[in-house]
Length: 176
Image (cartoon, rainbow, N blue to C red; front, top):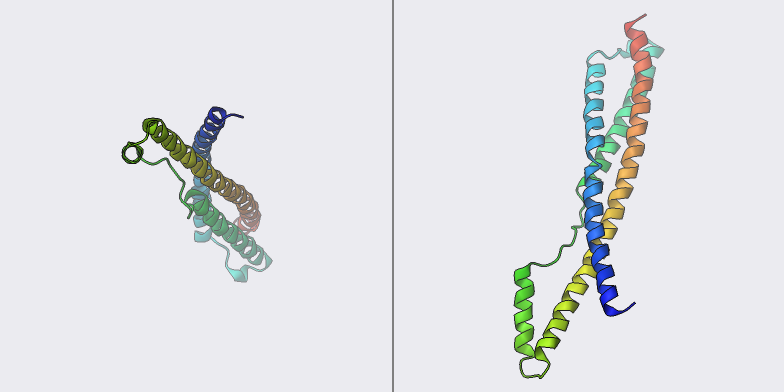
């Protein structure tokens, strides 16, 4: 792989990771809707919850209800972690900074015969290094986002499961 192919490859990977980030963040809209629906469902059941004196029906309701609430809380935490990573993604520096760097390189290499060519090499190297750093950081962040999304899915499934289990004693309590 020559220098131009390597530069092109690194550039493609950088933009692939930016696109991947957008897709992962877009995938958070469905879990958000599920979280809101579950919170609504939980608040409805809490308003009409069986009292603990209702015997085993009340006991089973509260056990499943609290398991569901714990799973929901963990799901909200994973949602927050996927949406708001503590490590920021890397972007290319601004064109102003690149142009300022180019001008400083032109000044530095002005006394050399191939000064402009060397300055262009340094600019290419700067951009190449930013692509590599950005693609690496963004890939690691996207992998973290994906892991949080997978854990979020697991907790949402568990929340739904326990919510449905808590609904059975809730229904039995209200429809004897």
